[in-house]
Amino acid sequence: MLNNLRAALLVPEIRKRAGFVLFAFAWFIFMIHVQLPNVNETAWQRVLQQGIFYNLLGFLSGGALQRLSIIAMGITPFINASIIMQLMTVVLPQLEELAKKGGEEGRKKISQYTRWLTIVLASVQATFMANTMRSSGVFYDTSLQYFLFAVIAMVAGTLFLMWLGEQISDRGIGNGVSLIIFIGIVLRYPTYVVQTYSTAAQGGLSLANLVAYIGVAIIIIISIVFLYQGQRRVPVQQARRVVGRKMFAGRSTYIPLRLNNAGVISIIFAISILLLPQQALSWFNRGGTAHGPLANVSNWLQAYFAPNTLLYNIVYFLLVVVFTFFYSSVVLNTRDVADNLKKSGSFIPGIRPGQPTVDYLNKILYRITTAAAIYLGLLAVLPSVLQQGLSVTTFYLGSTSLLIVVGVALDTINQIEARLAMRDYKGFIKR
Image (cartoon, helix red, strand yellow):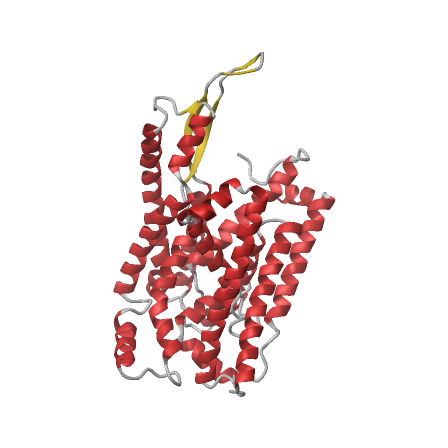
């Protein structure tokens, strides 16, 4: 693999694209340190300790939220806008027709709609965050002018990351938005390693628990690789065709049905819903303290629905399973697959075209999605169970972060392999 990586870097085009990605990463790290002015850092750290949603957002932003940088919201609003537009494309016939029949122009329009929706979502999120900061004493300047400045600055930071991601996709290697999330997660790992080492050195963590934790982490990473690479190949036979005076013989191929069609989206959906009640309470609290009925709801959530409670993990598991089935059905439309096979004169051996093909594909999809949903559900609740069982609280082994890091790494390697294949180089992974 190292030899092939060296060969890839010798290719001018790949070397240039890889250099641009590193240049973009440098800009991302620089923007993390561009902080908002007139901020009480002590009060902000107190707010962060009370908000679980902020911890997740800060983890995905590479620590920009902890520093209260202008990119504190990260690329999250753009991700949410992209997910919403993808779902709306399935729900609204106009968008569905635009995506299928509009060609390149249609895709550009959908991308433009996604950008406008990103501005709306970023503005709403920045407004709520700024309101929480002002009511909690984070801002030294509580005037309306500074409030609007903070909102505009955070929205501009998100739009900058969106633009930077598009530049990486066009001029670099891999998906730009995914790589920005990737580097944001990876930047947090050195801090976790130092904290864990310091805790172990002071006797707060046994060596056996640390070794067991590392071993489980390696096993999880290997299983995620198999999950992303796994697929069910449905055989397809193409009938003989006559084009003009030439006859083309039928050939055999297959439909690759991925084991994990939902990716990390189902876990993101589930955790967003779970954290929404607590975050909404923090947004509507006055001075950081709940009053009246909100106080009772807040106390109940902290007592029975905290991230380490049994009820939380059960609901988390069920939501991940439900959203995995839902998103898999959205991503893969078996009726469209069956219609395309029928139009091209292809068929699945032993299965009649039309509705029988749809039923057969739905049966296969249900089986593989069941396995993926159960795995993702267990993976979602494993970090809290693992941290409590082994007493490792300084290294956050999040299911979302692991899925993103491994998935982005595999996707980037596959794209480099595709570029190497055009130059007759061997790939990184031998098959």
